[in-house]
Image 1: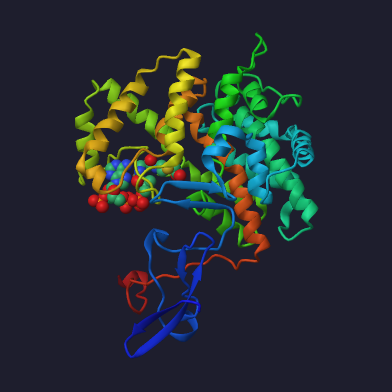
Image 2: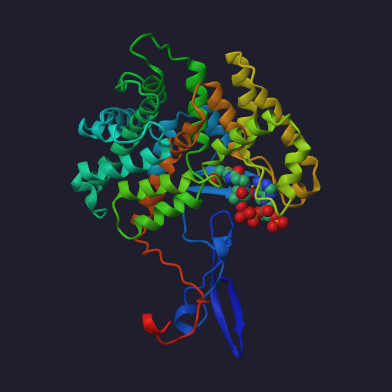
Length: 428
Ligand code: CMC
């Protein structure tokens, strides 16, 4: 028999259906309260509110489980390629060899960016944050492909937009970096794979050869996979809500890039390195910074600690911590920031404040150290997160459209002034 929740409000009792997910997660559906009562539900930050049913990513914050379309993140990070994972997230199944080759060749066929878009870069200040450039450039793509404006268009046209996004965003991201250094743009080389091509566009200089290091390719591949989706987080929810108004996919993804930028979300990877550097420069007094983080009158937080869903550990952080040690060893990099990070983690995990609140290092605590070791500058870290999250955003948008979800429009409890009469300016 299907489960029913009963809600009593005054003299009325409402029977609300319970929905159960494939991992036995349960939700009380409150939709019918709208028609039958004058109540709404209130849940700031949607801390315990589901916005949709989704078949893309499963995570269990208590057990530290993360799976894309059922596949454990540990297996994918160890064995798959990022493009394979992108295919899985967007299409629901792992590709056959033939499907993968077709997908890869369609993406490599679109890596060039329209030459007219080069002119846009000239107008940005050299110190512009690359996330600002990326968000604007992704939205600008929509102006070059007017046929993509209608999200209800034929599936073939949607597919083309998806290929264009996956292909062009690495080019735009690498060019944003080149622009900030006043260096010439490097064009994509299509015989290279996705990660190799990005590294080539980032680091090739006309004056010298650039040899792509397979160790760097492997670690980039892993980092992108770990970031590829994370169900209804701030940026994915943004993409879904913007897309629910039937705005085009470029506009929806651009909104996702903007949402990711904030230091409480994807911007945390940049904020972590800035925090660790600050601690190091200030003499490495960890207790001082832990005390600051615990002080409710001090806005300082331990960046890279805590997560809305994970309250025991973040499985991505576990993988990243191991790979951080491996990569630094393989590349022979000695980064004192890693030592500070490890000590900070050790101190915080023994502290009652962090233990009580279930605050553990998240995916971004160690990712910046790896990015730095492979030569990515700090202001590009959140762009790297965006590259990784792109297939997740696309998959979330596609699922929302295919499920015919209604426009996202939350309610509110109004707490402003009651009705009052207007007083003319000269009488106030
Ligand atoms: N340092 C110190 N205290 C913290 C921290 C932190 N990093 N994170 C949470 N708290 C405290 C918070 O003050 C609150 O304490 P109290 O119960 O006494 O008021 C309690 O822990 C619960 O925090 P919250 O802010 O209600 O939790 P949330 O689920 O709303 O926020 C979070 C989650 C990730 C925004 C938050 O933990 C945070 O700001 N962390 C630092 C930023 C960060 O690393 N963000 C990256 C997240 S992982 C990448 C991604 O997927 O976006």
